[in-house]
Length: 229
Ligand SMILES: Nc1nc2c(ncn2[C@@H]2O[C@H](COP(=O)(O)OP(=O)(O)OP(=O)(O)O)[C@@H](O)[C@H]2O)c(=O)[nH]1
Image (cartoon, rainbow, N blue to C red):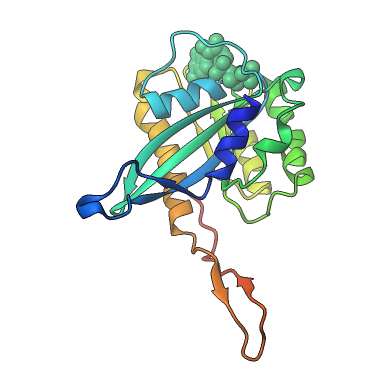
């Protein structure tokens, strides 16, 4: 797992499309967006990421150890993009050795709680705090996902409570189910919305002030944050 993380991190920004392009040209490159999925153990992070990348609910899952990677290539406005989902372990004992790898070069964060488990919702501040401790930039897109909405009779986290929390932290809230066949489009929409958002982020531009021999990195002005609810 550690080796896999190190390899992936060296190829985060661009990936080669594989083989030579037409007429012997260099192969097309696609942007990779690294999205980490975090939250308590058992909230359904593996199932959500599997659902998006494999298109179905997994038959069985085991507690994630360290991190699992899932990737899916999508085309947005004619550009081929790889969405790389880092399905992180919710159990503290399975996170320790990997945690610093999760937070390197992250483009977006998905916080997940289980709608049928109040404790998993109450843990969210500590997941947000973990992001802060790892110096995650404030302006990277974050979304909040309440999972397992198919278990209607067991809901412990009312929507208005979750919405208040999401508003306080300036995150859009999505309630969904990785399991319900009716929610396939919804899971798809959640990650695709994030990918659109990331794609529309302007890349860093190199600028060189007159008379200076030094190069400075200057981000382009950001568009106003929009809510996708
Ligand atoms: N009913 C229902 N069950 C779900 C849903 N998503 C996940 N589950 C179940 O919840 C359990 C935990 O799912 P995982 O995806 O392994 O949870 P996780 O958050 O990845 O857990 P860790 O790897 O320990 O961090 C499994 O038994 C899943 O079958 C859902 O949308 N609805």
